[in-house]
Image (cartoon, rainbow, N blue to C red; front, top):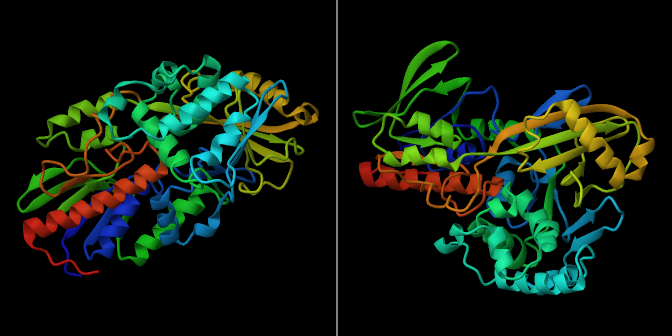
Length: 453
């Protein structure tokens, strides 16, 4: 290898992607991870005979960068993508519906489902179909869209409150971790255009068939080792500073202090941590990153002594429930049925006591799955992600920094940076790709480094 020295701080999907790409380009790469594992927010733990993911992650067929990373990690067989989008929508009254796509060219592929969505009046369904066609004409990169919320934009088009909550909100809350009135219309346009309307099969849902640690963290460790990356676990970077001819990173590793020098540094941490690392550098925009704030996700886990539903996943409206997933096989459960309830924008639940959540969600499950009334609960527990994503509200586009910074050799990665995507696995991987491209371009221009794959 004839490339320069690159230090990547952070072992989530963004950092892993950047490190692999930089290693492929011939750089000498060191990845620093403060934890004992890779994968960032996507990880698993054991509880009895279960392997539990802290949160239920799904993706869309259009997540091409993320799917390429799974290929690179050798785990594409660990996910299943629907042959055709289908999402049952349940209600406590038993009057549910199904969202599905038809074998028609975009955007007509969703028209029959929208026009037949039984949870809305016929008049609302017609409006919804018209709104879908209007969404397809929007440019997600138009800065004017980031000044209004999804809810405001929908009401301007005459969408009813029922349609805003029971259809658009159902999808947007899961994708943006924000209620319609709190979600940036620019990011909503990205979700609905790229994810649902531009191509007929973009909306097909991909569901992990393995625990996230086996899908991301462990395969990433193997791939990085094979690529020659020096991965240092339990190694915490304290700051990024200027140094003669490059950058310097003070670190603490296994109880002792040290310093790493680098030609380029990729900071691939969440925005709060990134701001702390860069506090000593002349980057005035760092102070504004705190305004990105955060939004929580809460996952409620219930193990029954018998199956209570035959659905792999379902959305729920008119209920405390949002999305419910059958995790029995993925978690390796040997008895009954294990359901995970995924609650996005869960501000009201993130600090609630587990007992209070039990009293709320178990009756809600019984309403939509009547067989749960006769089943015994073997286990009930809650995982909380208080800062699952940045707060994807109107005005955040101006706060998300580009990959390149004003400091030579310093680049940023992470789903919170200016990828144009919401805070998703796709956004994280895209940011890592862009970071690696910026490193290569920067080192070529500054040092005339010959980079060989």
